[in-house]
Structures are given as structure tokens and as C-alpha cells.
Length: 500
Image 1 (spheres, rainbow, N blue to C red):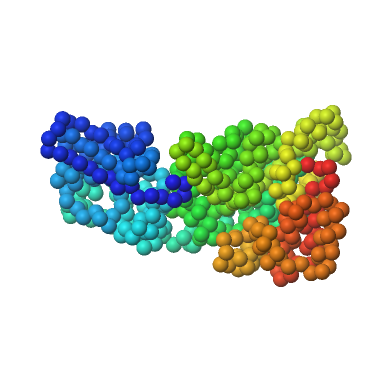
Image 2: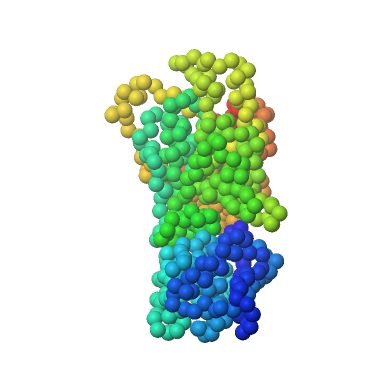
């Protein structure tokens, strides 16, 4: 149920009389219905006897829709117990896993949320497919038994073999800096944009880059993961739960150990971006949780797709309602949007003339609505790179991603300490009340903000975004108070008049 889990009791009844049949009730979907053939073959191929009488399996509670193959193992185990072939005490245990026809256990989605549920409900033992053992071992307080096949589990309960519980996994030892496609010292010039990216990474601020083709927008965005702060333990668990239920967690991996980077194509549908379908599943905005969502060619996305970003950008969650129910997924991502200034890409370029008509430019720029732009914290122009800098590349010395990442990590550590005891992880997540509490302004700063609000026509949202960015800039400098210099730099990142 979203990122949470619920207990399903698998009840099996095998009466002594009745024609041979196998029925599963309790609102099963097609995958659960097909468990009948998988379970029948797995039991026979494991050397056990499959009852030749009527079998009724009830998945309780009966009014909760059941989906997926995770019920295979408990159904098979229930049949073996009900038929008297094994007599274990399973009152303190939880079982889940997909069976293959030979009785082996396959990789199963959603192991991490279910393991956490087992701990919450005071179950002592959890039996999972061996391939999922590391994922479940992240959860403290329970014993995780990795099962390779059904025959091994039968022998374990018959006390002829022993299954050694998995060793607990230390989450903090796994966390690391994200790997990036490019290093910042490989990017020629663009020092102003690099500074904007550093601020965006430090406070998790959304950023919009606009520039001519070949100016380095995509390269800058793909270098961003290399300067992001490392995940905290809580953040890593949040992200891993999402990847676990969607089946995107790599096999044999315990956790998502670095911040995700998602880059959907501009032909991505609305459901693909925000999530949905008949059984609501997470979309790209949730898969980018605590990481980066890079939308290249921003105006090329359909307008209704971009408009669907309003709620997650503002609230950090996405709520999906369907006939089968409503679920909420986290969607606290750092949006990086990139765009050309016009269809041909050279409007405003000093070296190449724009071939677009004024009406074409206006229509292109209006593809992104004002409310979406207002939700983006940092707006930055990316100019084309000068030939001199390209030729003199060997002599240029630019900071590496590792050097910038250390400053970003220090600034984020300051924020974590500041917001300790709250649900806030970074400056961008502060509400209006939080800004007033954590970002007091001196009389000089207030005067500057009043003047800027009047001259730049700042909305209420834009006003508080400027203060948040100023707070991040101060954190990068290690300053305890926001100064006028920080406000002045933050104001530079607001869009200019008549600019999208």
C-alpha cells in the first residue's frame, strides 16, 4: 500500500472429502491466481505430496486487493502444514517470496517495507528469498532467514538442515557520494553556472538553465551528482523503499547508497512522470526522491505533463487516487531543467543570428507556465563558451567535483544540525513559518528585500525563495547570519523581467 505494508494471513483448508480443486479467494489479481500452478509444480518438484482433494486458500483480510507473486511461498507452506507433511510453529514468523516451478525462490519486490512491518508487528523471524537477504538484513531487531528453495525450508522445519540467519547490514558503511558522468573540472568556463549548481546542491534548490546549444547545460546537469551531499540513513531508507517496491533495486544490493539521478525523455507521459496506472506505482518524481530529476529540453514536454509537477514541487509528495484506493509517495527532488531560448536555439547569441520569427519565439517561451517557473528557485543563463577558453583548455585550472562536494557537504551538515528534531532535511524544504523562524533578517536585509520586491515584482513565493537561497549561500560561507551580500547574490538568480 504505497510505501507502507500490511499483514496478509494465508489460511489453507484441506477437508478430507471433496473433488480435487484448488481455489484462492480474497480479491487476488491475475498474478496471485496463477500461483496455483506455480505452487502445485514447486511442491511436487520438491519431493513433497500435493493433496489430491479440495484445497481452499483464503487471503485475509478479504476486502484488501492482493497483487503480485509474494504469496507463493506462504501458500505452499500452508498447504504442506494443512496436509500434515510438516508441523512447524510459525506464529512468530513472516514468509514471502515468488516460487519457480522447480521450487526455487526468485527475487521478490517490496522486501524492505515488509521487513519493517515484521519488526513493527513484533515478528521474530522473516523468511525471504536468498537473493533478497541483504535487503531485508538492513532492518534491525529481526532474524532474516535466506531461503534458496522450498525443499530447504521443509528440511529446516523438519530439523534436518539449518539455515543460518543473515548478518545485519550497517547502513552508514554503505553510503557514498554519487558517481557522475562528468567532473566539474572537465567543464570549460561557465563559472557562474557552476556556482549556481553548487548553491542548488547545497540547499536542494530547483534550478533552470537556459542557453544556446552546445553551451554545456546537459554536461553541467550530469556532473551535478558528483557534488551532491551523501545520503543520510533516513534518506537512504526512504529511497530504497521506493526502489524496492518498483523492482528497481539491483540484485544482491542492500540499499540505494547514493542520491538517484533520473533523466526522463521529453516524450514521457504524465503517468510515467508522476506515477499512476490501475495499481498506483511511483513515477519519475518519486524515483528521483532525495536526488536529481533532470528535464532536458524543458519546453518540449507536453504542457499538461509539466503542470502535473506543481503539487510535488510545492509539497514534496505526490498523491495518486484510483478506483482501487489512494496512495501517497514521497517526491522531494531537486529539479534541474534545461532549455534553449528559442526553437533554433540562438536567440540572444552574440555570434550566431536567430532564424526564428518573433511569434515563434513567444509561443516557444510560453510553453512553460508562470506558476511552474515561480516554483523554480534558481534561474541561470548559460552563455556559449568563448573560443579562447576552448583553445586554452590545457592551461585552465578548474575546481574538481570532489573539492566542491566537500563545501556542499559542510553546508548540508549545518542544515541537518539546524533542523534537528524536524522533518526538514534542507533549506529548500522550509515552509513560510520555518523561514521566519530560522532565517531572521537584519534591518539592512529587510530594506534590501523590500526594495527588490517592488522593483522586481516578486511574488510571496519568490520572496521566501530568495531568503532560502540567501540562507544556503550563508551556509556555504559558514556564516551564522544572512548578510546583504548573501541577499544580493540570491536576487541575481531570479528571472529577469519578461524572461521565461
